[in-house]
Image (cartoon, rainbow, N blue to C red; front, side, top):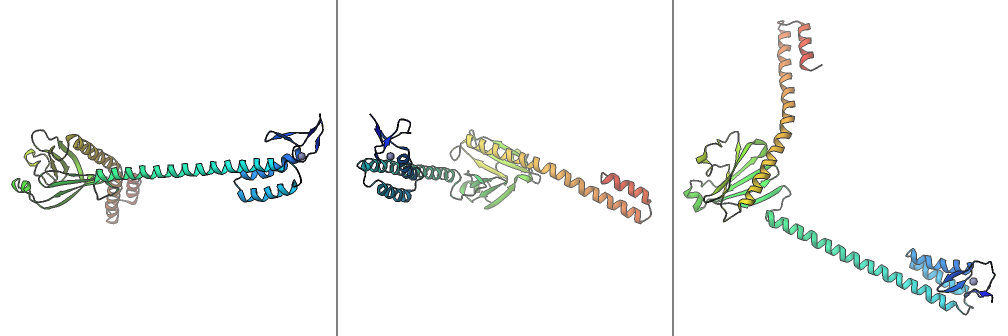
Length: 279
Ligand SMILES: [Zn+2]
């Protein structure tokens, strides 16, 4: 029994290519006519789909089985549109989730460092005796408010002191056990080794466990230490180079004066110059 193209009703010869569309055998021409419409959906071009579908309907308008294929094409379109809609919803859902996560992270940062959000501010902690410490990436700002505690500890200097890590030679840290703990930044100008001074020193942040945990202060202390080390390392290497350059230039200037005064010869000056400039 001979096969017929289900769409154009043409007889399909034994060697003719047959295509299965919607479980129906169709000829090559009909397959490509059908594919032209279907591919618009894969390209997500709905306008082109409608246009080509009209063309398709016109082309086979007098054929009995046209409707089967039109229904099939419309079903492909509908399922694709549904898929797109679902994808959109998933994207929206994902964006919403991402936004919520970002807000949560921001909120956690704000809770950790207080309302004065600043990218360089790493810790902000209230201590005792009116002390407050703001720890930045490059400095610490110690604030003292006059309180009853600061008055009786003769520490009633209302004010703010900024200490840059680049000026620090070390840090002293004592956890709060039975007594108050402290974190003190030693600078070249501060006399940091006088133990009795540690609690009242203007470079000290004093605390006890009623205001902040020892663990937290260990973390803060370690952070400051690491920043001082990092800045010192960076500074030392560049400072050495700069200092050498300056002292060599000074040296050379002295020899130039000696040359001008006739104390040394041109040859002696040139030799010295060569040596100092590392030529
Ligand atoms: Zn056909």
